Image (cartoon, rainbow, N blue to C red; front, side, top):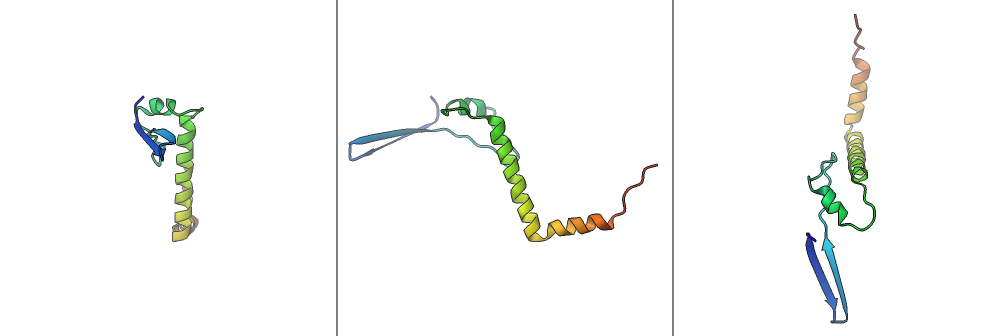
Length: 89
């Protein structure tokens, strides 16, 4: 098993060990080429597409909050009202 192994004992009575599995998902859902191998080491069912969706939705939420707080959101909506629609033909 690859990954970093950690262990700790409390006064020699209890021994606890853990394996650190690096699972990193970028803000836009980017993953490493070996992400399926890392996710296979985690107990239970872990869905890679679910992790990517969660990261993307979280990024969208952060951006919308930032745009609303900075007032940029209102500038875009007022700009949209001032620009005449494009006519085809």
